[in-house]
Structures are given as C-alpha cells and as structure tokens.
Image 1 (tube, helix red, strand yellow):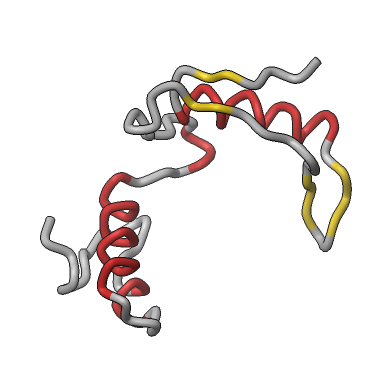
Image 2: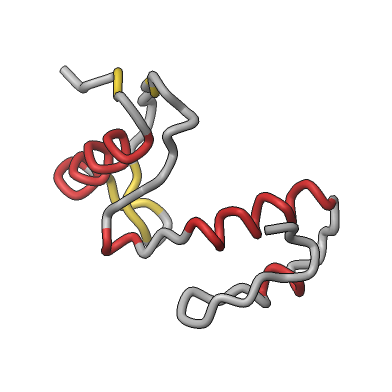
Length: 93
C-alpha cells in the first residue's frame, strides 16, 4: 500500500522520488507514476532539502513572482540562474 500522508513537501518528495526510481513507468523520455494521490499536512513547509534536486528558495520566490506578474515571457525568469543567482526585476525579494 502506498503512503498517502506526509508531514511536509520534503518528506513527500523523498518518498515519491524513491517510488519513481523503483516503480516508475517509462513515459515520454522520463519516468512517471500514474493514478496516485497524497496529502501534505503542512503545505507551507515546502522547502526541498535533497541536494541532488538543487532546489533554490531564491529561484522559487522569483518563479512565484513571475507567475503572479502575468508576464507570459520567460525572459525575466531566465535571468535567475542556479549557479549565479540574479533575481529579476519582477521579484521584490
């Protein structure tokens, strides 16, 4: 039986990554899980700490500001880099 309740996004990410690596189905040049659902008890606790994921709070904040701006161009978002973080002007961070 698959686990369906997680404390936070990091816990859900770690579990689902492992499931994808073990049970993932080859699909369109990637691996996928179908017909799954789960609950995150504290969705505001959404920082992913897996180093291989290379998750960046700064990038996530810039991406959120880009979504809120309604600008369909990714040019400003492209200014944010994982190696040299430069936040675009749309971000108020």
